[in-house]
Image (cartoon, rainbow, N blue to C red; front, side, top):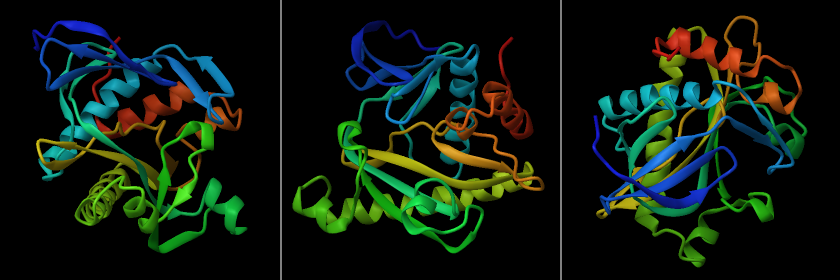
Length: 241
């Protein structure tokens, strides 16, 4: 277990907080019980959610590392905390959609549940005040958010993650509908610098297409943490308590 000393807060997001440590290359990531939607307009506290997401994320990050995807994840620190590498983050979200849902349906008028072959890929600017607008590679290059080689690396890694996780979730009786990833620079390399939990992806039961992700919170379906725990159980994630 790490002997890192936790320092002052670096950043507090809608559901996570980040803290400095006595190692300049490492941070502590705290998964809180806060749950938000619609750019923070709807916020609630859900008991156990921080613990479930922290351990779920650790399981997924280890799976990706085992499949040669470099991530910022280092190790679990406590039920709600983990150690991560300190990255120079790129302000871009990479989104892959395997099934039509969410904003794609609203923007393009397509029916929810339509299988997308091949999967779609989209870039968005990470900016809550602007509601994360869609952007393209020209924007990224023009505003110097990332270089051409970094753009290609982010795309390739996002598709690789999709291939790995689609198969793993399928084995667990789940459909990976869509997800978003963020990347950063660490000592010259592009590294996955995001969480992977039901907060940042859509997961449906493969047979019933029941929603098992944060759409349960967005749409007032209830049973949010219970759904997250069910997904974790199917994946073999060891939860606490």
